[in-house]
Length: 156
Image (cartoon, rainbow, N blue to C red; front, side, top):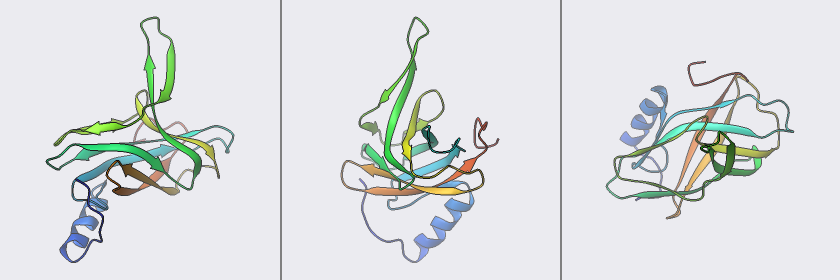
């Protein structure tokens, strides 16, 4: 279960350690976001995308119901798929349940954060804030680094 609140005392040290290790822990002790990244965009005429792993460390299922960012007017979680004939498609994924102790990967070619109607270019070396919204009203803010336009993962 996600609980809203502030991070105080020893939790601040835990947050700093998580950020420095490449993971973000924000807004809930049950949600850990790891390896967030995005590719630079070609201007604002084409959508952008962001990727990450969302881990549920709690004992109850969590439901990711949406995302928000001031970078895009229409941010949504999408699913890319290829059918038996080799035809690629992409559509909104809807709500995504994350079982206790499990993780969901947002990665190229699968689930991903689709950033439509960009409000500004996604520039290599910059970052943007993305908020994960859960069905119980909890939110987790993630700072997403923008990599090069040809990046294929966080290590590119």
